[in-house]
Image (cartoon, rainbow, N blue to C red; front, side):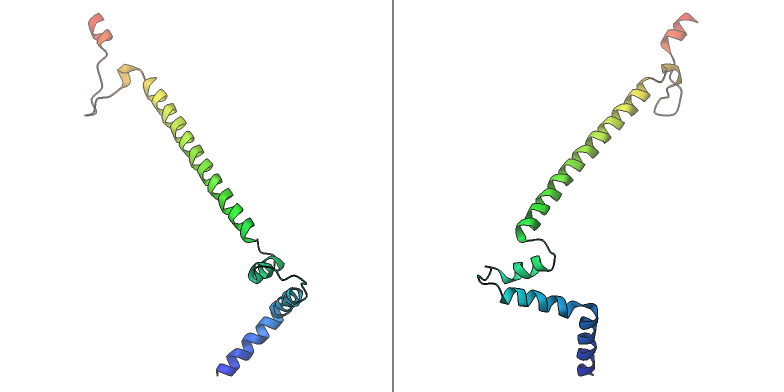
Length: 113
Protein backbone atom coordinates (compact mmCIF):
# COMPACT_ATOMS: atom_id res chain seq x y z
CA UNK A 1 0.00 0.00 0.00
CA UNK A 2 2.83 2.44 0.87
CA UNK A 3 4.59 1.67 -2.40
CA UNK A 4 1.38 2.32 -4.32
CA UNK A 5 0.95 5.70 -2.60
CA UNK A 6 4.56 6.64 -3.33
CA UNK A 7 4.17 5.68 -6.97
CA UNK A 8 0.92 7.62 -7.30
CA UNK A 9 2.58 10.68 -5.77
CA UNK A 10 5.61 10.34 -8.10
CA UNK A 11 3.28 10.18 -11.12
CA UNK A 12 1.40 13.20 -9.83
CA UNK A 13 4.64 15.22 -9.51
CA UNK A 14 5.73 14.17 -12.99
CA UNK A 15 2.39 14.91 -14.65
CA UNK A 16 2.12 18.33 -12.99
CA UNK A 17 5.59 19.36 -14.19
CA UNK A 18 7.00 19.68 -10.68
CA UNK A 19 9.78 17.13 -11.28
CA UNK A 20 10.93 18.93 -14.45
CA UNK A 21 10.86 22.36 -12.78
CA UNK A 22 12.82 21.15 -9.76
CA UNK A 23 15.31 19.31 -11.96
CA UNK A 24 15.95 22.44 -14.06
CA UNK A 25 16.47 24.57 -10.96
CA UNK A 26 18.83 22.05 -9.36
CA UNK A 27 20.82 21.72 -12.61
CA UNK A 28 21.08 25.54 -12.78
CA UNK A 29 22.35 25.59 -9.20
CA UNK A 30 24.85 22.84 -9.95
CA UNK A 31 26.15 24.73 -13.00
CA UNK A 32 26.78 27.95 -11.04
CA UNK A 33 30.51 28.70 -10.99
CA UNK A 34 30.12 30.61 -7.74
CA UNK A 35 27.58 28.98 -5.52
CA UNK A 36 25.07 31.40 -3.97
CA UNK A 37 25.25 31.95 -0.22
CA UNK A 38 21.75 30.53 0.12
CA UNK A 39 20.74 27.59 -2.05
CA UNK A 40 17.18 27.93 -0.81
CA UNK A 41 16.94 31.58 -1.92
CA UNK A 42 18.36 30.61 -5.31
CA UNK A 43 15.73 27.89 -5.71
CA UNK A 44 12.91 30.19 -4.58
CA UNK A 45 14.02 32.91 -7.00
CA UNK A 46 14.31 30.48 -9.93
CA UNK A 47 10.84 29.11 -9.18
CA UNK A 48 9.43 32.63 -9.29
CA UNK A 49 9.21 33.43 -5.61
CA UNK A 50 10.44 36.68 -4.11
CA UNK A 51 13.84 36.93 -2.48
CA UNK A 52 13.98 37.50 1.26
CA UNK A 53 14.75 41.19 0.60
CA UNK A 54 11.75 41.49 -1.74
CA UNK A 55 9.54 39.67 0.76
CA UNK A 56 10.58 41.97 3.60
CA UNK A 57 10.08 45.01 1.37
CA UNK A 58 6.57 43.80 0.48
CA UNK A 59 5.79 43.16 4.15
CA UNK A 60 6.85 46.73 5.01
CA UNK A 61 4.70 48.06 2.17
CA UNK A 62 1.72 46.08 3.43
CA UNK A 63 2.26 47.51 6.91
CA UNK A 64 2.45 51.08 5.56
CA UNK A 65 -0.67 50.60 3.46
CA UNK A 66 -2.56 49.14 6.43
CA UNK A 67 -1.60 52.18 8.52
CA UNK A 68 -2.76 54.57 5.78
CA UNK A 69 -5.99 52.61 5.36
CA UNK A 70 -6.69 52.79 9.10
CA UNK A 71 -6.02 56.54 9.09
CA UNK A 72 -8.42 57.03 6.17
CA UNK A 73 -11.06 54.94 7.91
CA UNK A 74 -10.66 57.11 11.01
CA UNK A 75 -10.92 60.31 8.94
CA UNK A 76 -14.05 59.02 7.20
CA UNK A 77 -15.62 58.10 10.54
CA UNK A 78 -14.82 61.56 11.93
CA UNK A 79 -16.35 63.25 8.88
CA UNK A 80 -19.46 61.11 9.15
CA UNK A 81 -19.76 61.90 12.85
CA UNK A 82 -19.38 65.61 12.14
CA UNK A 83 -22.07 65.41 9.43
CA UNK A 84 -24.41 63.67 11.87
CA UNK A 85 -23.74 66.33 14.50
CA UNK A 86 -24.46 69.06 11.96
CA UNK A 87 -27.68 67.37 10.90
CA UNK A 88 -28.75 66.98 14.51
CA UNK A 89 -27.97 70.59 15.39
CA UNK A 90 -29.85 71.88 12.35
CA UNK A 91 -33.13 70.31 13.55
CA UNK A 92 -35.40 73.07 14.87
CA UNK A 93 -35.80 73.17 18.67
CA UNK A 94 -39.58 72.71 18.45
CA UNK A 95 -39.13 69.32 16.83
CA UNK A 96 -36.52 68.02 19.25
CA UNK A 97 -37.53 65.53 21.90
CA UNK A 98 -36.40 65.02 25.47
CA UNK A 99 -34.87 61.75 26.62
CA UNK A 100 -38.30 60.46 27.64
CA UNK A 101 -39.75 61.03 24.17
CA UNK A 102 -41.67 64.20 25.07
CA UNK A 103 -41.32 67.12 22.65
CA UNK A 104 -39.23 69.98 23.96
CA UNK A 105 -41.12 73.22 24.36
CA UNK A 106 -39.82 76.18 22.48
CA UNK A 107 -39.46 78.90 25.13
CA UNK A 108 -39.67 81.64 22.52
CA UNK A 109 -43.05 80.41 21.31
CA UNK A 110 -44.49 80.03 24.86
CA UNK A 111 -43.54 83.57 25.90
CA UNK A 112 -45.32 85.09 22.91
CA UNK A 113 -48.50 83.05 23.41
